[in-house]
Amino acid sequence: MSTLEMRYKTYEFDGLDIHLRTLKDTQQFEDVDNAAEKLGINSTVWPLFGVLWPSGEVLAKLMVTKPIEGLRILEMGCGVGLPSLVLNSRDADVTASDQHPLSETFLGENTKLNKSSDIPFHVADWANYDEELGKFDLIIGSDLLYQPDHAPLLAKFVHNHAKDKAEVILVDPRRGNVSKFKKEMTLLNFSHEVTYSEGFKGQVINFIR
Image (tube, rainbow, N blue to C red; front, top):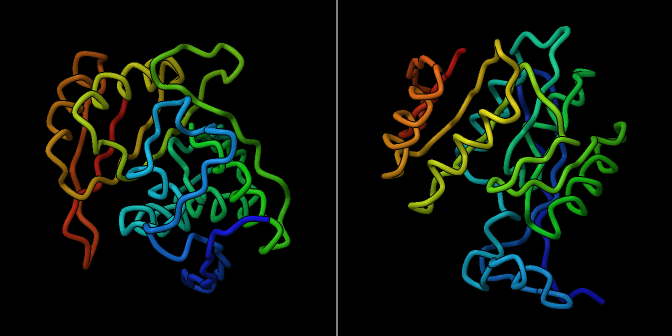
């Protein structure tokens, strides 16, 4: 039986209510069969996937009104999956991805909470190309650049899974690695524009190729 403590909350976005189950806090830890440790996820960073960060809420809000018709969409590092749940409620063609061994379980529980259809999930390792995942018109992510080596890995992953003409939306709380990521994306022929969200101290970066 799991010893993890959970939190339940409803997020309201312009008439759209999304119910979300998260970890109670970042003090939770339960690595069954050392699945996370084998992936290099230590006890300090283990719970980070399971709480909602401000960047994730900003990204979810953006997805309420984002034009999605005809787009194949990927959320990178989805964690508990709030942006994907918003898109799924709009009948978007969305796939969620994460490396954490419990992310798929949390995403599944959250789709049940919202009585919505299943969201395709893919275990994603940014360091390796995965032909099965395919390519996307729109790739989104929030608060992904919290380790120094993430910028080149993430840029390579985006390059591998973005169509020739694609958009990438990254919400970042001004971590120190975002400038390096912008440079990496420029080398991959992406232009970018920085915008801001009211009440959020970070930035929203739109990359276009």
